[in-house]
Image (cartoon, rainbow, N blue to C red; front, top):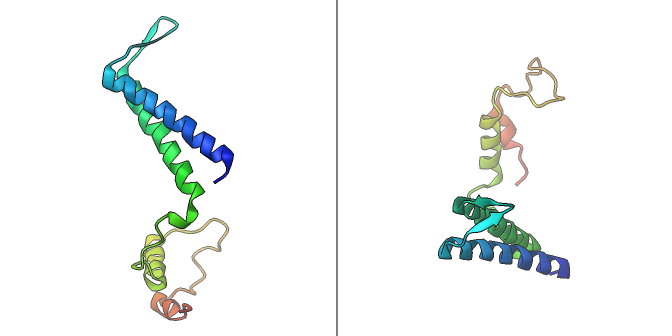
Length: 112
């Protein structure tokens, strides 16, 4: 892991920890005479802890969960076909192109 990534994860984690301590102990935060509500710290905890976790996971690509085996090529192609039915991709020709008359036939040509 690169030093900047370690430092960023540490800073984001300490910010989240500070907000967590504020919520647990009920500390007041007053900025320029304006009292900051505790619910703002709850949002900050989720935000900063989420950023720290995402940065940590991004720096460890081999340890992330792989795509489940259930999503094989055929099922993925079916999901894409049925999700995109009736929608036109920008830049593609209009529906006059009838190359998908038999969608099951196109699924049979997928590489294994």
